[in-house]
Length: 384
Image 1 (cartoon, rainbow, N blue to C red):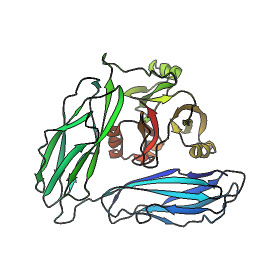
Image 2: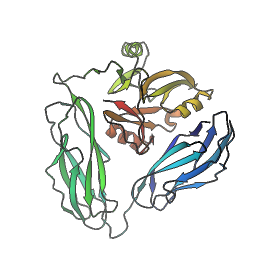
Image 3: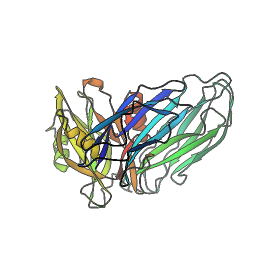
Image 4: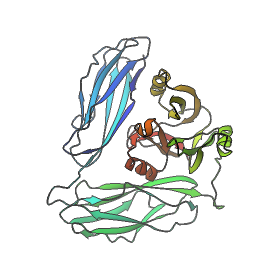
């Protein structure tokens, strides 16, 4: 038997501490030819991700479905996650990733709290060179002083922290530090900076990212013959994004055959053909939202099967291949996380954006898009 969840993962986004999100329904389907027996469900963080209405009993027949709902109620400020794990006889398991972030609109009286960016995007920099320093500002939005104990980079060789003016911040005060980027290799590079302080919700993390260029200063073609580049396009009238990796499609988009599409300057690598430990990425197309059309990509086999059954979406092909992230959103060595953002139906038609740039992810969240994926919204892992 094969169990699948719809949706396969849930990103609740920001929820105010002390409040609860709307309940999100989950449907578990047995797509196999035999019943799943001894079915059991475990929740790794039941205190903050609360289950209700569970109709999944110890047996789920072939072709049958059951349902439950999950509500997110953060206990404190900061990022939270959980895994719902269904186990069944024969050693099978289905894992569903849940993520969310607890936020406080106003810190409690007498509490210090730092405000800092979720991500910093560094300028494209040639390998062997160092970028100009980018200034990062921290602010104390609380009502009590905050002492900053340390600001450290997890990848100090490529993302160097210097020039900090942050020590003790009075309520309402701000301070700065600098980040410089010295890529060790071509392609997308990333790291994180941790700010340890006495403020509420600490320590806090900033994701940093940048792109390493060859000595020529231009983009570097993949050296692996099984690696190609997916190029991002944007249609302003549709307010939609599209990431083709097929040369013929890219040529027609650049040549204006498909009217209205323009390159955004963003791209990431993908695998051309199937190989060990790679997942096929299904691509769908819909004209059900006329006059707008939309594409949708998923590396999740269960989600692919579900969308194939939706009459509003036409399955086009398995267009490329990627690696899978861990349940916490981390990617294997030599790959970069690809974040998936959903416009939540804005503009009267659904659309997703896929990006390896954490700063772009943060910008889309500010526009009301939703993160979908594991951890902070990682849907797949792209080769460097």
